[in-house]
Image 1 (cartoon, rainbow, N blue to C red):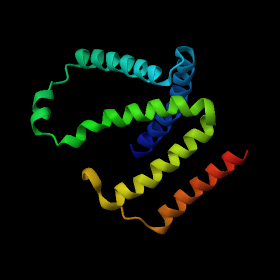
Image 2: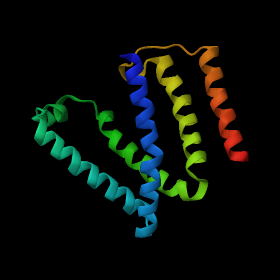
Image 3: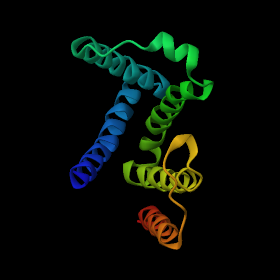
Length: 147
């Protein structure tokens, strides 16, 4: 099962540069990256709404409004910042450099999240092997930027 999940994560990762490139193209047509991000979220919202209606997922929104900490609501803000930034960056840096920097940033911050067990995730202490992995990614970023 673990290998299937790893393959799924890889496949989803392959979708991100494709989505970003398509959104960047839409941003070019609209002459506004932020408008392309809005369209992205509107289409995604409609799709999720249809899936929720079709799967009879229980509606716990009122309970969440009452009980959840305020920080759980900033995921949408972060998603909007990510999509808007990518639409802006891809035409200027290219997909490979943009995503290599994004992956590097994700890994650096993931090490911090793991090490401190933030937001309830299991603690995975930082060690030299993990640091070496991030440094190898950073080396890849430098090579991609050079060529």
